[in-house]
Amino acid sequence: MSIAVSIAHLQGKKRKEIIEVVQEQAKRAALEAIQPILGEFLEAEVEVKLGRKKGVNRQISSQKREIDWKCRYCGCEDANQFTRDGHYKRNLETGWGHMQDMRVPMLECQNCYHDVICTFSILEKYKRFWLDLDQDVLFSSGVGQSLRVISERWSEQIEGRSSKTRERGKESSELAKRS
Image (cartoon, rainbow, N blue to C red; front, side, top):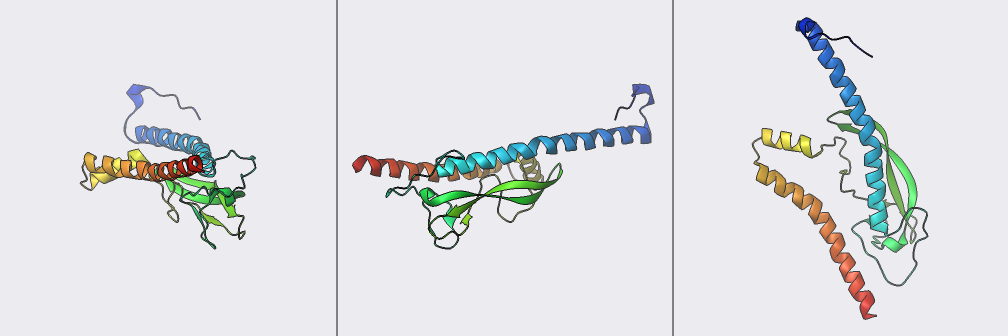
């Protein structure tokens, strides 16, 4: 939709209408851009956790490759025992509007054939409202938190999960060297 705009005529109600149209178009464009990126991020996280790309056969070995995701039924944490099991659709509210039918990957344990509990770093389980960094900074500063506190919280969230994975990876490689 195109609207001819002249600065001299932008007053009152007409100006407000134009701003609202532009804001709605920007929100729609942001949602359309964000949804595929979120999907790719989730797929990349599964790929990193499993240690293999989509379509590559899993390694069956006596060496366990433990990750921080585990089977809901038997408690297995061995990435070598997990396979991809399709996707489920999830709706999500964002600061830009409603994101519908976002595809979230699922995994299945090959020991007991039950679902694996996947806690993605970018999505919180059972939370239907997603805040990104910009929105969280605005919200947190609005309730009086300092930027230092906000920065420390985000660093803990980002580095905390990746450092656990790195530590387990180091332990696995050290065990492999010993044997």
